[in-house]
Image (tube, rainbow, N blue to C red; front, side, top):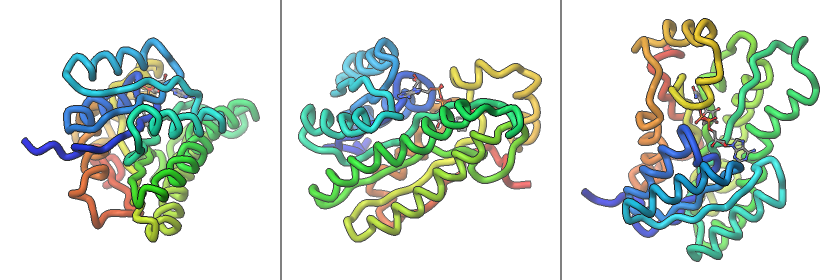
Length: 249
Ligand SMILES: NC(=O)c1ccc[n+]([C@@H]2O[C@H](COP(=O)([O-])OP(=O)(O)OC[C@H]3O[C@@H](n4cnc5c(N)ncnc54)[C@H](O)[C@@H]3O)[C@@H](O)[C@H]2O)c1
């Protein structure tokens, strides 16, 4: 089978677990050299080891995506390790389930900084590098919560809507630099993020999706692969929804 990312270098944030790990493993299988940007060193190293065990090339950059210096280091270390940066997947996301009254200012800042500001920061340095190289590709993971309102997710909803705005803005600004920018909106997945949420809160999401189940991260990762590949050469500023039909009705 053709390796759709042969010769490319891809940095993926939050690739130690969940969707980010599934994207990292799939991209490596498709020939990419993978940079794992992860706050949890142990989990990040596990992803690197798994890629190397299957014969791929990977490097760990331990970062907190909320910090400007760390975001800058992600691009710098990718270039140092593999000579270039072709694809950035802004994947990290956290969730606090509260309305605006119960959300503290610190909680708001934590969610919005982690989910949205981080994507601005990581993209800022990646775009500068991609420009120099003559092009690149950025994929931001939003959510069905970037498309509709969900109960008790004020900060998460706001951040995920913001991600789509940032994607559209960057797509406009950097098309002339040959940089494509797109969003993926997953529906509910079985990952460590959802494992922390009580079943009674998860059940309505399962019921409201047409397929009546949650996705495995490996069912969402191919959406990111498509956008990262040359098969999506005419796709920019788009929002690829993979939500089991949740937002259809
Ligand atoms: N799980 C779902 O049901 C679901 C649904 C829709 C969208 N999403 C989105 O998909 C993306 C991935 O979600 P997931 O469920 O795989 O999450 P997860 O919690 O399972 O994994 C997130 C990873 O990011 C890392 N991380 C957390 N904070 C970090 C930081 N500040 N800097 C660097 N790394 C950090 C964690 O260590 C972890 O490895 C997120 O953007 C999330 O909002 C998830």
